[in-house]
Length: 532
Image (tube, rainbow, N blue to C red):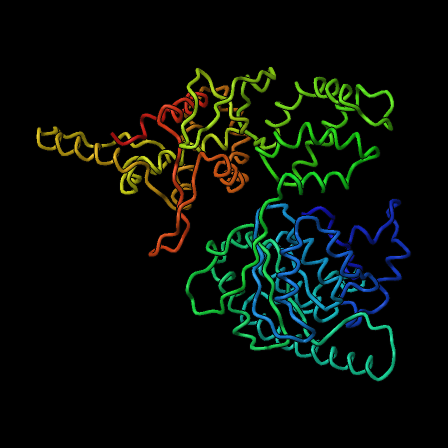
């Protein structure tokens, strides 16, 4: 997530960790499972850090840490719901968990990745509040079975009331005599991480329900914290619920990433710093995700060290130049692998040939060249074409351009155009050119993307079709991540939200020539989908 790994919570053990490598139950975990949970287990246990350790452990996130500490307030202070958002791998989860380790306040953490259905999410929250551990002795069953949001509200209120009472008693005991208090205060916080995954559940009522949970519970001792990789306007509109307080986590800067990876340097920090100077800047044009950069850098650093006799030596300028010349041929292919999506393999990647790139200018137009290579996957290229179609064509023509199978409709009625209609069409086309590319919502972009990718599946020859059918699902993965990369590269621009729809709108910034060149690399008939 961020520059430090997620802190391990002692009260949460997995079923796999309960067994040793020999397949027998781990004695330590068996002893841990036999010990009943207490109210102190809602905090981080014996793990604690001071303020200086908190600020130094999360490089580049000091403003967000101070803002979250301000919103959480002093001990036992009621809070409004907090909505933390930012791109993937920018330190959101690490930051909030480190803050609670510092504050020693009780909380419940649920990730919508592991809790992949409403029932699992509801029961995970209740199990933690009811101090219930799923073990072999109870058949790994939950404390309460809960499928419906209405049942969850009733069970959640009962569990919260009991937890708050236990926290008050715990505070009174710690005040009467000096005891080792592991929890602080009478507030309990519910943290819902990876909130964007809920949209994949086909349960449209779960997200509004979670955002209204603060109003439904009406308990000042409960705080709600939402963590998401997408912006708030993709979730809710004016539904009458309390507006969460937004805390934005921007992408790491080049200096932040350099500091993060320097602290993770394996062995010689001077040698690794010289390696970062060679690879960090070009890779930051492609991605700033720490997890993706870590994967790419691990293999590249091994290649970088192949020409080093003494790994403990401090590299000088001559040595840096020699190592960079050795590494340079491998940087381009590694950048292509960053956003690799399972799709039809291109001959350029197979032969490791790197063509001249098209560098987008400020107005979005690229340099003219015969062939293009953007260091991106086929998925991103299809997304770029989809954005161009959405900006070029009126939204009212989408139904006529795409039939029920996703292809270009071949059943259009041909009419004999009169001279007057031809003049009106020419005037409308000139006005469209003068207006420039139009804006479009995310939903329309994804719909066109799905249509044209399904067309490409059936328009290839038999051999290519066989390979594509096996890998078709990969073409739809991480589309939002690809869209963010295209926006950062100025191929697609973000516009203001529509006052009627309330959703963010986008605009294609590439020329028709550039879009046609990209389409030709994919053998996609773009001209058939353009309004003339």
